[in-house]
Length: 124
Image (spheres, rainbow, N blue to C red):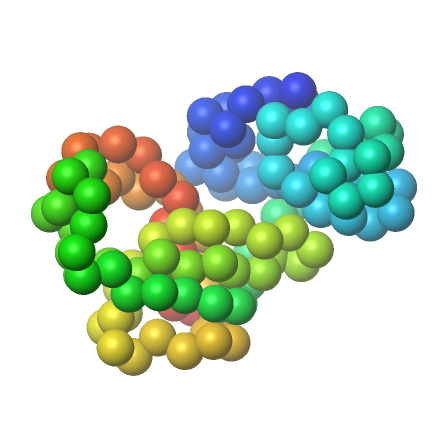
């Protein structure tokens, strides 16, 4: 499965089979990848995505692009899940109450505006 695309990765996460790609040196990344973006190793294997992560950094979006106009305000966050960093939308929390270090879990949800699937985080 290491050569699957992002849509297949979202499918796996939605089905409770979240994973990431890991090289022999322990670097984590998301598909699609043929080599590790950190060290260039071509030896990648699937590893289970941890059930919880933490918010590393975030920004509150109050004026959005047309594809997210009905979603504002929303929080775009980078969250650490073990050795891999995921970027998605943080939901289920007041945007003004978000803090770095907040524990979250990853899921697949839809945008309010376009109805397209996206990576979402919810507080744990």
